[in-house]
Length: 311
Image (tube, rainbow, N blue to C red; front, side, top):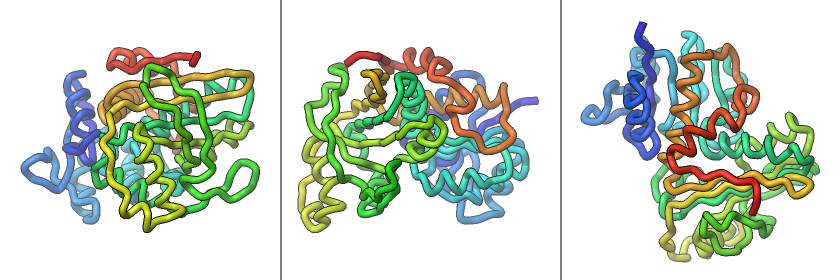
């Protein structure tokens, strides 16, 4: 029986790469979306009947659409279809954890690769600080803007119990020279895995965000602290190099860096999909409870991702 993968948002920034990679691996990948000219299956996620029909004959669903609706996952899971998502939102992950069926959480760069790097860094003890650097030149799409704007001003609970606002508490970290980032502080940001990792690893895990452009990073802080200033700050050009560095206790550090965030996301998601087809799950599962960093290292390195343990 032929196994097929439905990619929601299959013509988008990450989805189009994922479809191409899966097809190159001999897997039937169906790009789903509302545009009939670009979609193999026309699906409007706001229309339950459209989604139900679109799931026919599918083995795995990967959501690259940017639409975070747990009912989509539930619609797949109730039919025994594995669901995963490249999203980053913690509140959304909490909802996915309540779905009755096969849902894999943390299948992007952050969370996902960040999660697995943090697990390795925690082997030296805690706390673990995970620094996420994105190239500002790749973040101009509506989904990225909605994510970053949506975090602005919101608070989350730190492992010490205090309340933290996104894009505050700047802290300077060392990053690998290979990334080419200038020295500049990163900002506390509520990525979807820091809370789960704090519980699972038994040490405080904190995530930080910065962009390759200093002005773009300042603009993030201004979104929370001085929104009127953020509105008039210019959009500065940035690159497409991303970097993650997980700093643990006793100087333990694990990092990854490469060019092209969306392609790297697709490479990671494709490897996860192929493993899901061979090794199905039955209930909501976080990626670090299912695979290890070494399971993804080879395909990511083949795609140009560089790994290291020293800075």
